[in-house]
Image 1 (cartoon, helix red, strand yellow):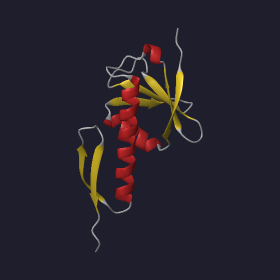
Image 2 (spheres, helix red, strand yellow; image 1 turned 90 degrees about the vertical axis):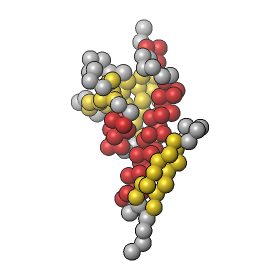
Image 3 (cartoon, helix red, strand yellow; image 1 turned 45 degrees about the vertical axis):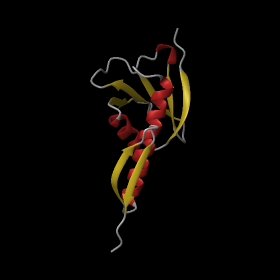
Image 4 (cartoon, helix red, strand yellow; image 1 turned 180 degrees about the vertical axis):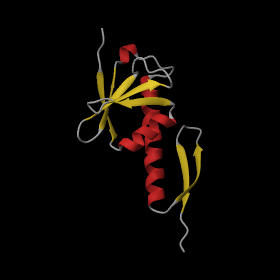
Length: 120
């Protein structure tokens, strides 16, 4: 029996969510109710999970009893939020005139970003 869970994510930027899904090697499609259906790359038979907009943020909708990725749902959510944050920071930095010089993955799994801005 399916039991879908809804998890609040603090993800509010659709373009950055799409980029994040691409970065994590997922395909997606938007349905007529603005749900984002997420698939394994090139396998669009049945969505793995989806995101729904609640007016403020996108919530992750998934049946964790039938979770079939090679990683735990907790680890996936951690990586999703980390990649989304990286994309938001990078995008906002570029808008503000900064350049992302390097992104270093630390031993603890965190990311160290080096951005710079030259004054003219």
